[in-house]
Structure formats: C-alpha cells, structure tokens
Length: 238
Image 1 (tube, rainbow, N blue to C red):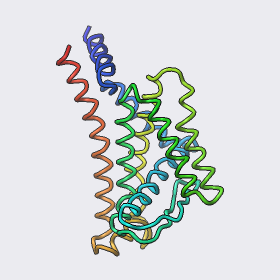
Image 2 (image 1 turned 30 degrees about the vertical axis):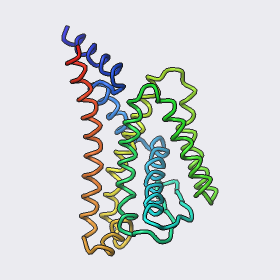
Image 3 (image 1 turned 45 degrees about the vertical axis):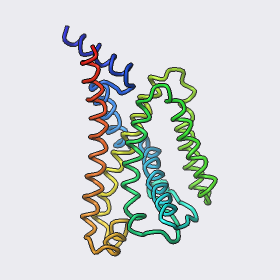
Image 4 (image 1 turned 135 degrees about the vertical axis):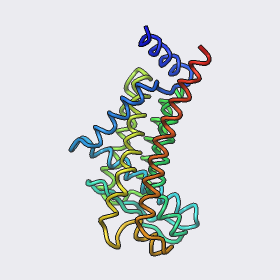
C-alpha cells in the first residue's frame, strides 16, 4: 500500500513538473555512474564532457574580448581550445566549471516535457554550429559528428518519457565526468588548467581542482534538490 502510494506520488511529480521521482532519479544516477565506468561504451560520453569543456573555454574567451581559432578533441577525451586574448583567469576556470554547469542546465531542460524534443534539437544544432565555426581537423570533426548524432538520433523515438530519461542520464554523465576529470590534474606537473591558473594567480593548483570538484558536486546536488522539491510539491497538491 505504501509502495503504491509512493509510486503514485512519483508519477504525479513527473506529470506536474517533468522532474523524475526520487527513485527514478537515483536509478538514472546509478546508470550514469555505471556507463561512465564501462570501457569503450563510456568513450562518446567522455567526448561530450570534453566538448562542453572546450566550448566553455571558447565562450569565456569571446565574452572577455578574445578570439577563438579552433578547438581540438582527442579520442581519449582530452581537448584543446586555441585562442588569443581574453582574460586568462576566467578562460582557464571556465572549462571544468562550464562542463558542470552545462550538465546541470541540460538536466533542467530534461525536466521540460513539452520542450524535450526541442532541447535535443537545439543541443544537436549547437554541436553542428561548433563544428562549422571551430572544427578544423578531421578527427575533431568526426568526434563532433558523433556527438551531433548522439543528440539528434534519439529524436526518432516516439515517446517523450524515454527522451527525457535519456537526456537526464546524459546530463548526469557530463557532471560525473566533470567531477572526475579535474582529479587527473593532481598528477600533472606544470600542465593543464590548474597549473595555468596557479601561474596567473599564485593560488596553488590543487585549490582550483578542489573548487572544480566542489562545483560539480553542488550541481549534482542541485539536480537532486530539483527532484526532491518536485516530489514534495506533488505531495502537497495531492
């Protein structure tokens, strides 16, 4: 009887707000965690985090008065943004911060039932535009093409429920990869965004890494808050 009541509340929550129930969210988070740990299968989702990382560098460069030449993505999930000018501190910080923020924003889009197809289309279009503006080498273009397909192919599905769940899992994988990626910098000496920021600010690189880890964790927590608040609202209205 209690299980049935909880299921009804979760269903009401999804219908009213588009947010998944608490149980569904935890399942989606577990799925995202498992997929990010699976060899080969996790590769496109590493590219996804790398894409939003380099895109954030590029946008930060433009917003601080610089110019972007091109971006480069690699099969192992690494990436580079080639730019001139702009504010180095903002540009350097924006990569991991931006990837986590993009993940959270995509999760919010995935709780908008009427706009879920538009969300997939917009994200796929953004990848295509990025390819046209900043894709130069064949490997980067091939990786970006795979990411565009990752967003556009699900539009073939007829049910929005599966689309929403799929997009939320993608968003959670972006945030989980943004949470894990900065830890690699702790083992690098004089390389990466943390080393560059340490040079620019005299703040040790490990502090920047801890800041990025905290931001990614907060973004995942905010997703949970979105789900939890929707469930509580459904209970009150019921």
